[in-house]
Image 1: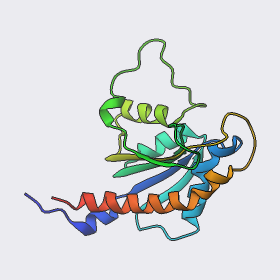
Image 2: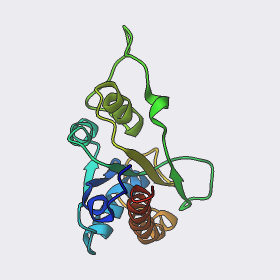
Image 3: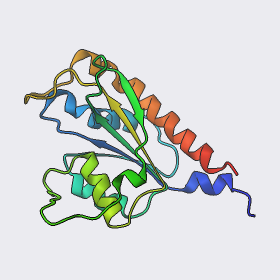
Image 4: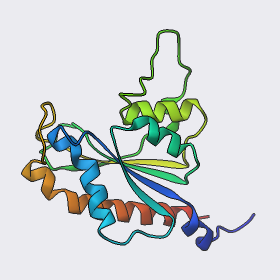
Length: 174
């Protein structure tokens, strides 16, 4: 059995993808976290990109081959606005075929649809982690994050970096 190579694990590409609509208040959270990450130094082999509402572009990028995908988005989970969540979707939850009448709208691909599409075409990355923030305002159009969500941007950026570090460390475990 070959021992894991920590140097090789550090070179495995990881995509950090911010998603959300910047015209719908707190839905812009993913893009704001990407801006915070870009203001600092990313580890080698880590790409941070704001995909906005370009779910199809994200799906195609994921299919290029990544060891891991970290999605950053807003998500109603029932907590206080600004609460951060870490979730790990399981590949098997996205199994199955598209049936007659099922649609994948390329102009409205939310993270669930992106993962479903990627799974369908066989491009699932090694690991998928979602870092999400409980929004305060998301249903109506407007620009700017609410105060609690804005306050969560830097902690979320730090959480992304620690998640990337953990993913790399796990890749070196026998």
